[in-house]
Length: 341
Ligand code: MRU
Image (cartoon, rainbow, N blue to C red; front, side):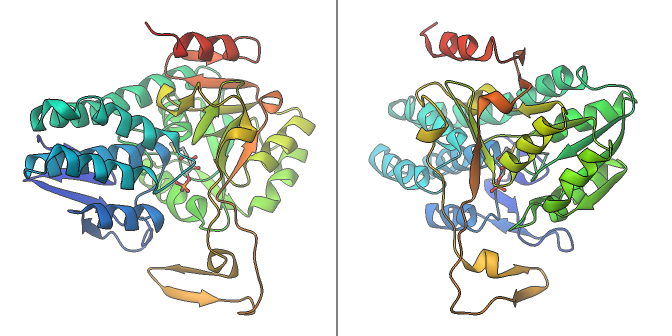
């Protein structure tokens, strides 16, 4: 396979390596990934994360294993194991389905498919960034949640792609970074990306976003998605729904930014999106390059869904790589997409 390099994933000299996102921002450690078990463990631990990136990582691993001489039966079993690693992010299933469609054609076809998925994602990010940047007012102050940037995709990102493009065009003055409990993808990863991009930003606890909105400090909310259902409802990192409700109350535009690979036309609405439930330990403490801390009683139980669903009624616009859709046209656009070309 050819050399492929992104911020958090690199394939070179027949080695697949992933930037360990669990260790950021203070430690930039690359992990070698050469087995299905390693990839599944890294996805579960969120060492590789972000809906588009996990799909591409899984595809690159399958292509690599095909080049190592794995049989079609072994590769099909590997794809089935990878598919279960993160249930909400439909990009993973989409990438695996695209690999499965050429699996009977041998290693060369799988390599071409994986390379294509990587390069396609870079182009999708670029197109979303351009469409989204047009929507923002001059000197926009944008609030975002979780991490949707170059750590979560092969390219510039979805919501963060838009933020970076708007900043490059001189249209964006400030980013409010939701820290994103419980795993702090905002406070750790988005803040790291904002520093690297030189974008003025401040981190706030998720529970502080409503105050910023009330005080007129937010011109737009931009978020990513792990799955968009046929009616426009979408799943994203838990806390997104709270933001959408608050944005609606304060009359602030709320945009979801995602490529077509995140749309699931077979999923009728948000109720049908599977939501991953995660370990109580993530709520009861924190871990990272600094080690592990627990602050809650050992015997306490916790409620820890990784994602929530935002109903389409709360969305101002869907920024896809094919354009910006409002409530009136998103359903028709998704239905058209599900028809065979
Ligand atoms: O659990 P994570 O960190 O993978 O959650 C990521 C998100 O919720 C992102 O918004 C989503 O995957 C889109 S990333 C371009």
